[in-house]
Structures are given as structure tokens and as C-alpha cells.
Length: 473
Image (tube, rainbow, N blue to C red):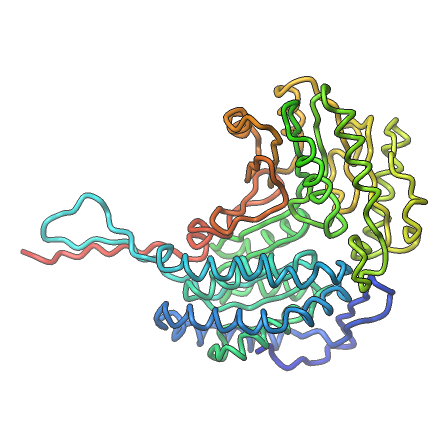
């Protein structure tokens, strides 16, 4: 359902596979004329789509899901080639999280989009609030969880009666192709979903176009500022999920085995390239050493290597430059007094000048170090010793970001109390790195604004329209 691509003076999309460095996808970028055609079609299609009964829209989404599930294995393989996550894990993005979210959103839609009736009934009047679709939604999606991040916006936007134009990352362009194929298989009407391969400059022009009524963007803080600038000439808003530096606090009464197992996974799954991955950990001094020892022992059991090998459980980072950034953070921390507990020689595949990077655990860290303050988005975590809940809370809040925070304790009441004062979008107890489709996915500070998922997510993809009807007299 994407438009035919036109050559624009040699401008090309090129996807370099982190697996072995070869060009995996190469094709011409689309141009301004393609944007115009896509938005004209989207605007026209939306007039009919918004009047399509919700029950029919739900059926389209479930048929779309059927296609994705039927092709999960091949989708997983091409995803591994595009962004490097082990092939043993990539099909799971469709089979687990993606499937869960689509089904939940589809079932939630009737409640989320139902008319709101004021409690104070007035004789002789019919009063209600209707959720109207915004119009055309532009989705700018990232590569790290290319299906999970994009489905959060695409499916609820379509269910709400909007049409969607997707611009996906140049690292994962085949994701957009899969969406198009799945919606075509589902029989979705022409123009309701389209995708475009665009340069950053043309993506900004897409967002600035007066025919775009909402932008959903997941990416960097710098990218978020570019989005705000692009839409500044019109009165629309953007949902922005930007940077993160998600903390965990392990209290002295925590179940150590559970905390270690889940926090190692939270730090190193997807090579640490998770929006809500664990990037810093604060541990009560009474259990600090046991926690660190167990954390290191489990980390050393990971196998770094070619992600096409089913025995690999940690693959390369998305590109060498990203790995070099993390290496720089580690080197800076060590120069400032931190201690690296993982001998890189234990991971022979880890080599400078490549995207293959061993997981690293740092202790004796503090907040003067970049690795504890700036987003790493890689397989490194710093662990600090704390004396109290108060100290842990102060350190967790000492960050320009706030997406999620996790607390590990047997005292749920204490966790809830601490959570009330954490500057974050989501508070977890005894779990991390998870998106619950029944709760809004949102952040504070430089993590962005707006929300996806849950009833609240539908509110951002619709506008309220009031009906005040005098029926008598």
C-alpha cells in the first residue's frame, strides 16, 4: 500500500546489516511528490474510513494480525538481518508482545471510543461527548523494537477512524513492507494505511504538511525537538517517546534470585537497546555484594555471537558507531574510578571496530560519569551501593529522563510509597522492561510527552466533540 518510489537525484535508502556488514536493503527514497500523493489519498480515504462501523474496523485488524502470526518466522529472520537481535528471539516480537497488544487494543476499542454520558441527566436534553478521529496520523517509528513501537500507534489510530502514513527507520524498512502486505491481505481499503521511505528532511516536511493532524514519534531527544519544530506552524500535538535512563532499586528484603535474573535480562536483552531497558541499579548496602556477585555470574553465562545462530542470546548492536559510544562511556567511567567486572576476553566475539560488544557491569560508579547520566542504549549497566530508600529515591530522580523505574522488594506497600515520589511514567514492582497494554505508556522530563496504549492512548488519537441537544420544549 506504499506508493511507487521515484529516484531523487541518487538519494537512496541503505540498510547495513549488523550481522556481517553487508548491504541488506537498498532502494530509492521517495520524494515530495510521493508525500503529496500519499496525503491526498489518506485525506480522501479517511472520510469513508471514519464512517466504517467499529466492528468492521476490528475485523480488519484481526485479519491483519492473522497475516503477521502466519509469517512470524520469516519476519523474525529478516528482522535479525536488519537490526541484529538473535533469531531465537525476533519471532517472539510478533508471537508474544505484538499479538498481545493487537488483541488487547481491538477488544478495548468499543469501551475507549464509546460516547461519554454526563452523570447529571437533564430533562429535555440529550447530552454526550463523542470521540472523533483526528484525521491523518503520521507515525515515525524506530528500529529497536520496530513492530512493538509502531503497533502502539498504528492499530489504535486505525480503530479510532484515522488513516495512517508510516515512515519507518532506514534500519528496518522491511517492517513497513510487512505492515503493507498484512493490511493488503486483510482487505483494508486503499489509502487507509500507507508507508513512505523518506530522508530526515522530507520526513519533517511530511509532518509539517497541513494535511497531517497528529504525529507519533519514537526516537532521540534531538529528534523530538525536530518534530516539535516541524509542526510548530500548525495547532497540532505530537506524541513523543524519547530518551531514557531507567533505574532499578533493590531493597534489602528483595528476593535476590528473582531480582538478579530479571535485572540481568532487563539490562542486556536486545543488547541493551530497549526503550525501558535497565541502565542503572541501586542496591541496599546489606545485600550489595551478594547481588553484584550473582549479577556477574549470570552475565558471564550469556553467549555473544552471530545472531543467526540459534544458540546465541546476545547479538551485535545495531551499528559500530553505537557500540563505540558505549565503549567510550565504559572507558570514561573506568578513568574516573569505576571498576569493570566483566573480562571482555570471556566474550571472544566482542571486537573493537565492530558492532559486537560484550555485556559489561560497572561498580564504584557515581553520577559524575556519563554511563550513569546519559542514555547508553547498549549492554552496560552501573551498580551503586545505597544506605536507604531516601538515598535511592534521590539518585533515581537525578536524571533528565523518566520512562520507567523498578523497585525490588517483598514490601508492596513500601514500593508503592516510594513509587509515588519517583519522577517516571511507570513504576514496576519486582519486574521491569515490560509494556502492559492496559496501562498508558508515557514519560516525563526529556523522555517526552503524550501516551500510547490503554484507554488514555485512544484519547490522544481522538478529539472530544460535544452534543447538547434540546429534545423537548
